Amino acid sequence: MKVITAIIRPFKLDDVREALAEVGVTGLTVTEVKGFGRQKGHSEIYRGAEYVVDLIPKIKLEAIVTDALCEAALESIINAARTGKIGDGKLFVTDASEVVRIRTAEVGADAV
Image (cartoon, rainbow, N blue to C red):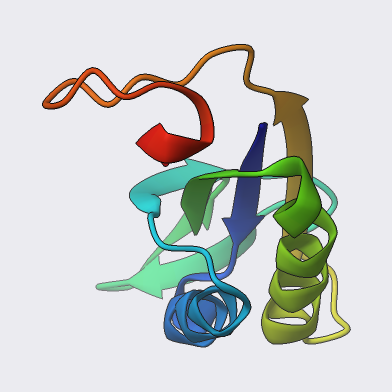
């Protein structure tokens, strides 16, 4: 089992969700986050005053997938989230040593 964590642009959420559904990912956790990397920040003018916006709004997606589904899920996220510009995001893959569905006490792939 693998945990895929993706940080993407907010407007790409629906595209990524649909792409993951097509490859068989059945569950997803979505969180609104803020951060910066190479994209840095930008300046905005509000009521005549200039403000520096250091933290850029992003979407954090987390999905638990089987080892067999991991590569297909990664490719679908990359293809759906890519714009080709700085700030497209990052993907992180970590091992999930155990997964348990609380309601039924199912474990492993049955719990996903």
